[in-house]
Image (cartoon, rainbow, N blue to C red; front, side, top):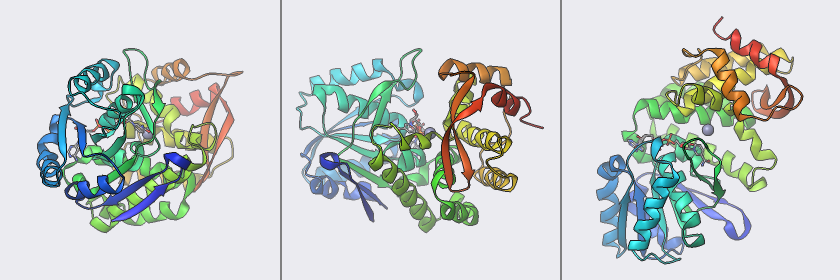
Length: 360
Ligand SMILES: NC(=O)c1ccc[n+]([C@@H]2O[C@H](COP(=O)([O-])OP(=O)(O)OC[C@H]3O[C@@H](n4cnc5c(N)ncnc54)[C@H](O)[C@@H]3O)[C@@H](O)[C@H]2O)c1
Ligand SMILES: [Zn+2]
């Protein structure tokens, strides 16, 4: 078991990464000073796989728990789903000190986190991420959110958890496509900030995809450490934290142009390559490193070829989503593997050029 403290003054918290933590949760909750009457928010897929393990440990240790189920899927990350949860919390007569445990992927983490942030102006939140994406990214840093019909990723809060308990063993049941989805964010960290980590990934991607235990632990812990380090310096995303958007500008446009049929990580992989190509065309990045990125992305079973989307659709989604100043859009660009920067120099015509020649 490895522990890391994310230091944010009185909002500091521990991130615990290890094996079979679900079976040790009672002790971890005690160490975080949390109350014994708790509410678990999860979905039926995770409840079926891990409900027994959770219940056994917590009930055995004298916890009183209620479990609230939300149907599976991104479509559940809505204000309407939050409203139903508020009602259930009211029925349970939850108090301000009642901890909410978000057990699941990024969807559950964001939704349950949003509910915890807003119900009674804030209940203690514990993130228990069960997808690779949630373990390396969404459970750390306190961004919680829901979507409404036309507004994506804009209704939310910065609300730090009291504890993140990352049980790597839960990844054993994660489908391969979801695993690859999380690998996109891992590759992102390496490209923006840590060239040694990038080399480690090049050397170990096969083992990682076979879910080798020591490899998984190393990759998750290192990713969490990078993200925590960035969040500590810029909790509210006003500067440095922006570099975590590497790959996400085009990524979000691809996701939305595909009507969310393309997964987040897949879209981010394409977005990272797009940013790499732009940086290359601006003379700020080199071809050999761009190629290393492409190879690693393919080794992670992520796409390097643009799927069946016209570049016009992607461009339209991009300009709908992002502010454009004097024909230019803000991008995070790689300078070299291990170093990225925020640029306001990318013109719409450069974006068009990169997108329209994509698969050549
Ligand atoms: N808050 C943040 O900082 C942040 C960062 C990145 C992404 N996100 C959000 O995260 C969401 C995506 O998260 P995700 O990729 O984890 O998707 P997800 O939560 O939908 O999980 C993917 C699928 O895997 C299943 N699953 C989860 N754990 C499992 C396990 N251990 N075994 C088998 N199946 C399992 C889920 O039920 C679901 O069907 C998006 O809504 C995105 O906006 C938030
Ligand atoms: Zn992301």
